[in-house]
Image 1: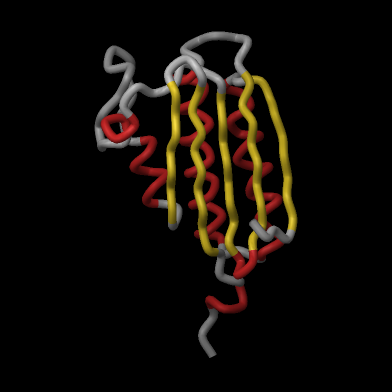
Image 2 (image 1 turned 135 degrees about the vertical axis):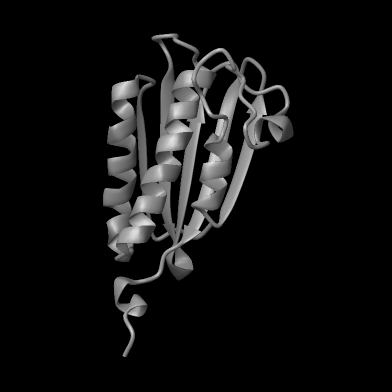
Length: 150
């Protein structure tokens, strides 16, 4: 994979770090001069992925770690990989169905993967029970100057 720049970060799977993760990704993406809407899309997608890791992957455990890799690829594509070593997902296609939740007793909407998918160009999810889950998102970024009409 030919990359122009890369950022790797790990942090504890704590809810207060969700805001850090989305801000970090957007600050790194700023190198591509994205539109405000594209930054909002990235913030939302990253927020959902990190929240899923914390809430569903680690289920209240305090020893979890989330690893984030962000790459700027040719043709203004941003690659975001969010991985945990939590409980994993037994049935990824089922988990990706809208309104499905592994924690129905909680007030969760079950839309995390749907939101990630709608705010990125490509989403892939891989998981192994008791090993963790990896979410990879890609989004092509337009330059701010390309969005104005002449």
